[in-house]
Image 1 (cartoon, rainbow, N blue to C red):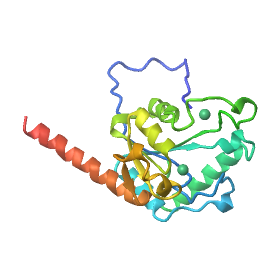
Image 2: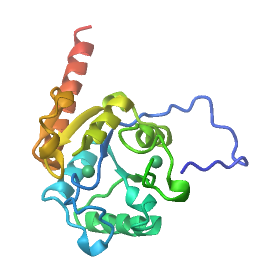
Image 3: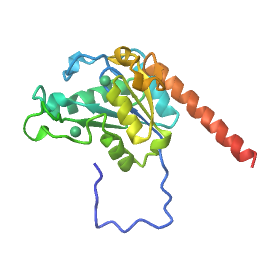
Length: 217
Ligand SMILES: [Mg+2]
Ligand SMILES: [Zn+2]
């Protein structure tokens, strides 16, 4: 969350804000094996190659940000603290691979199944773009040069609505939605590791194109 401290002097007008490219990642079925309302640390299991994919994206200069629908909170299956504990565990595991996630965002709501305050039609639940827009605001992300990787139509839709390039992985539920007509033009990759290769390949090609444009002017 952004914090403001009014005792700070105003930012210098010559400050140049750098924009970041990001790869937004769904969590369950994309980073880790899908296990229906996962919240226990002992049930967490990386999809093979996922830590290496995260490392390669970060090493290439992307922010890697998890955006996860966790309606299990709203449904009363587990609480927000359990999700925080699991995310700390993921960071510890990733540190063993020499990498980390830059930020985690999750939506605890559900429009029908949520209890109490969690039963709302929110903008953060994917297919809505809310979590991506919030992250873009907080981390100064150029959404048009960013990606959203996930295994469900809601991930693809959230990415598209935020203006990112969506990529479907065939892990988790991905295999069962790959043939849906609304995503015929969406890139599909076997898993997160392949998706990271595609993204790095595309972004290096875009850089080459930009350099060619500059040099031909
Ligand atoms: Mg998923
Ligand atoms: Zn929400």
